[in-house]
Length: 314
Ligand code: CP
Image (tube, rainbow, N blue to C red):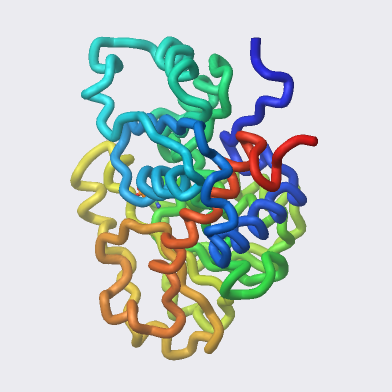
């Protein structure tokens, strides 16, 4: 029987705007004062089950749990687990719930973490499922926006690159709509446009202007937040299509000539070649700080789901 207050994070809509704001604000405090929280997860164990490669998400969750005084189990290669022998997600999750207090799962199949949450007696966090959702990247992105722009509401946000398969975009754009973004600018090749169902949802549910463009330079002067993304090679059905599109966007300092002074450039990383290395020293580039902030907002999320520290009951 599941605990009555058991919560999971499968998609950003699982949390209200107020809950997200509180998480972002706690993440900021954890970033500024990490020692205040250094043992709130003492005696608790986080399991990370990564059926797909990761650097930032896997290790920032590990780092977050260790910084909270907790411990870790898990795998970064499903071939070393009994998934290799054909074990189902449902069975794996049932068992891992005996070994850990909270589970973080990345899986190439859309919906796998949702399925896991249905069989789990401990909180499950979606660390990315196929081209679908990446809610903890969204929390990371929101903390970055809060730190660098001072507020989450009212921005003109441009999403550039692979808007079709990019799960970070799918999660963030819906969340920024909930935070009353001023305008979205969608910059992609025709083949990698935002799914039309998501575009329709944004137009029907939220009263936000959407502009589409093929080139960054066409629209750069309007942008408050430029969210660059990698072309998602692993989601393509054939190599030829990927090769045709892989260099669609390469951001250079020239292309930023007319950008606002206080525009920020974000990227969930890893980058391949969509941002030239010369941009790293541009004052607008915040993508490495973004990956650092991911640790602290994940600390906040673990605290919330385990109901410890500021989220302790009674
Ligand atoms: N941003 C992100 O999800 O990176 P990883 O694939 O390295 O976890």
